[in-house]
Length: 165
Image (cartoon, rainbow, N blue to C red; front, side, top):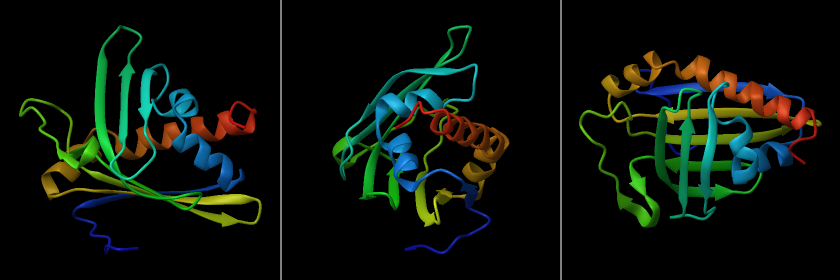
């Protein structure tokens, strides 16, 4: 790991899953699979773009049952197949700096997903790192652990039911 975890700035979610690293990787890196689980139900993801390369685009739109839409875009920074995926909302594709509206609930962060093979299963650790305590607390109060936890449960269900293969 390149950075030291700072509990004042970083959020961490760990999960041991009894599904293969290869399928977890596919769930994170293929748009047709990510659309199935990356928003807590009943929200869905009608639009998802993944250009899986450093500098490539990670863009998605989440839609509520009432039609409310939230979109985000980011840039992939590091990709090590079946091991590590790093992206940030602070940069747009091509490493172009992102400009978030001051009235936007969106916050800038960098996400690191580390996958480790454990027998036939996977240990997944997600780090979401922030620039300051304020944005970390906002992200936490928005329901980071609950929301991302629900999404990981949905991913696990998609894999176990053969919808990601």
